[in-house]
Image 1 (cartoon, rainbow over the protein chains, first blue to last red):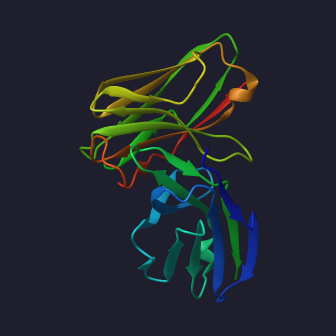
Image 2 (tube, rainbow over the protein chains, first blue to last red; image 1 turned 60 degrees about the vertical axis):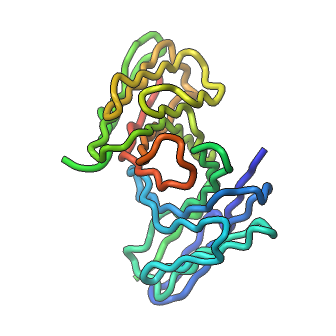
Length: 112
Length: 115
């Protein structure tokens, strides 16, 4: 059974700092990995999707990497801003289904 | 209105009540999902519908009953719930039928409290 773990559970940083969020998964037979953002009381917004054949994806100040063989992904946020404060969720897709398996998330607070 | 909408946004119900959650997507997608998000637990997939047919039922208790009358609407009928069913219920949709690897688009969720 696939399990996704995110470390740390919570992170507080000053504005402007570069930071890394970690995600690990137990079964390397994934189809893709996604990073989502969730603001309090709201739904999820997809940030980046990495196919299993890719090593990384970039969008603005966000960069996500994938090491499928070791079961790890990182989300790098450059020059963090207070507006980046949210919970960041990692999810993997197993081949053959639309099922996403989620981690518990990392709650990020960026202090002005 | 665009995207995925959910109503109501908040719901309080007793254990003997019957209520329904509604999800509507305005994206022309063919697949829709129900997820449960409990405190301190990962998001859990409950049901998947593709082209209005249920293709996944993730061992969900029968007190939760989904309905997908067309590709734009998804309901979750609730009856005789338990306090541990209190959670945020999220609806999502994706473009294709069973194409793996598509991004899912989420609604804002319904915050449910069972007393």
